[in-house]
Amino acid sequence: MFYGWIVVAVSVVALVMTSGSRAAPGALLVEMERDTEWSTAQLSLVASVGLLVYGLSGPVAGVLMRRFGIRAVTTMSLSGAAITMWISSRATSLWMLIVMFGLLSGLAAGLIASVLAATVANRWFVERRGLVTGIFGASTSAGLLLFFPIFTSIGSSSGWRHALSVGAVITVICAFPVWWFMRDSPAQVGLAPYGGAPEPPPVADRGIMRRAVKRPEFWLLAATFMVCGGTSNGLVGQHFIAHATDHGFAEVTAANWLAVMGVFNFVGTLASGWLTDRIDPRRLLFIYYSFRGVSLFLLPLVHDRLSIGVFAVLFGLDYIATVPPTIMLCAEAFGRNNAGIVYGWVFAAHQVGAAAAAWGAGIVRDEVGGYGWAFSAGGGIAIAAGMLATMIRRPGARRTAAIL
Image (cartoon, rainbow, N blue to C red):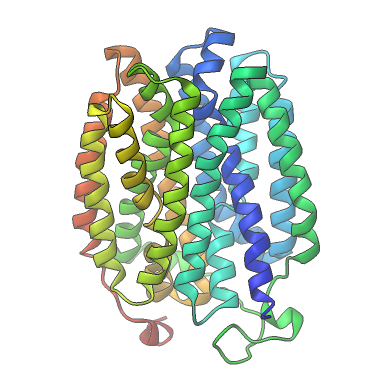
């Protein structure tokens, strides 16, 4: 078996665990309000800081991976996420929770959130690259969504502090297989990339970002992915459970529907990866964002098991389906070896959107007593993002090397 698939497998473990750690603020929001008497807006600020730093860690991760290697950075990320979750479970003040679970935990988890997927996919695969990025995208969002019922169930029965402690233990255990099996490139084990010719260890262009920021493709990718983060991780990821409880659902029931969303997200993102190898990625982004916008307009109308089930399935199929076409467009526009660094900055924009939406929706709920206006605004900007995606120029993979 091609060793790259083993690297994919341990990368999936790492992505599931670090993204899963980001599920805790949304999953434990209601329980933390009861236990600490902090407001929705205050706890949303913790989530917002974590989401923001989670994204801004991407560019830092690109530099660290170039210097120390994928294996070392991935292991360090998992270990750091575990330590900060453990300390966060002992937090006795809001500022301590912001620093530990917002700032430091977001930083640790974010070291592999974006760059790992793009770097592994582009270093180890020439063929099946879209499929691999689909697997990674599905793993990232599945970790976020599948950990919702785990954290919520433990939190409702044993408290939010115990839930964070359990998450810390699971995360540190997963660091061991990653350290043992991860490799930095095919050349390290005497192989060529899957479907490609043998090549030396990849070297990224150190000046790529100076040129990238001068091109409209970068800003269009960043703007559309910012909307992706705001409408997925920011709105639905952080506030779906609280919104469902406002509409009469139990916390654990709402978390279980998020798990259903995670299952269908896995299917949708894998399908998106397969489609990205065959269809213009810009067309896929237009469809995904438009569909997401319509879904968000309908979310305030969810009041019964049938409607919440339909929403979970439909939104799940589209949750992170945007990742494979976005990574593909980064690789085509800026070069395969530069895709990890460029995508790291694009992902930073994704998390800026997520952070703004998470905090903003919390303020809206405190001020007007519900999330209706927040979800409607998200629906509108999602449809606008779909239109922007059609404006991205696509030079073509074969011409990229000549352009750069």
